[in-house]
Image (cartoon, rainbow, N blue to C red; front, top):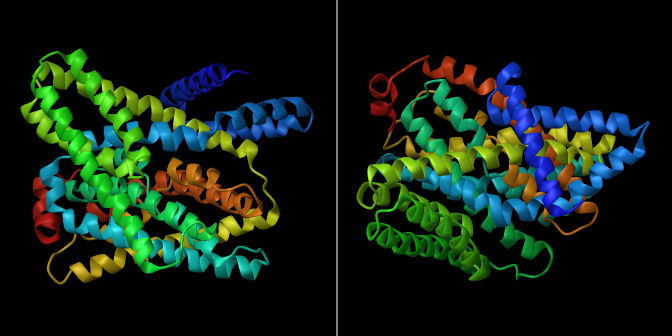
Length: 427
């Protein structure tokens, strides 16, 4: 099969699963689509016991898709920009301290805690993985995915401040997680020196450099948007910003994800208010919402189908199951510790730590980073455990998050009610 035929098949499956979910299953779209793709994979594996050529064919074309490149070098930039485009900068500014602490310190702390826990756990199970590789595993599994969780929070009537915290953290910790992953990967493979100064310099170059680049690219695009009033041209300019900006940032060894998030925030707020007509805003929102929905459906279909190429053993599956509580505990500490420190000068919504812990879903970014690891036994082990963690996160945490939010925050609370009950006490 050609690449075009593979993409056409994936889009067709995404459309079919989305339709079936909407008509019959009625789960949140991303969760329903992934569940059906996972069941489809299991059916193929079952049929493959009697018709091995079918499973072999499916595995071959899925391997040709190169999911890690497709997400990290393509889909991620669109998804991050679409997410950042609808984040209110004023709301984000109110939560900047919390978001910064969670996106920077939280990811680093989670990487260390989970990496250490999985190193001990694998040793106890008799599976071998060096401590550097365990930290690398921690870096790829620590970033949270805002795609599935945001719709659930909105449908549950979660406080606006909580939505902003989770969305802002997820948008920025994707970029921070990728940067941390690349730094630790260089150390694990011997490409980078193990020194705090070198690591600090790399992080500064990638993260801060990416933010500055995104600000400059976003501002240039904003000035161009102000000079025209034609929605076709303006939508095309945002498309060029996402694709060209991400590619150029990566070529300059800057963080493309952070650059695109910063650019998206600038265009979605300053650009929307001062550089676009009402007609352009309508078309721009429609275009990027459609891009977001299509890519999300495609992303979760591929995650479900990745089951076909994994080399599971009983030991790896057991390690994945035991890694679930380890990851949840690492997430709880990495969220709870910054919140506990900040409680001295600000208050938080009751249940915020619990909701942010359980709502820290893992998704495509973790699978893609695991797939991008160098070939070898370490990669296969990390990939299998990552897949178990991602599937549990999306299916179990995703499906139980709404009842948890309703129980802890109360159904249907308006922002004004929440302000009295939590935001005025929470911020």
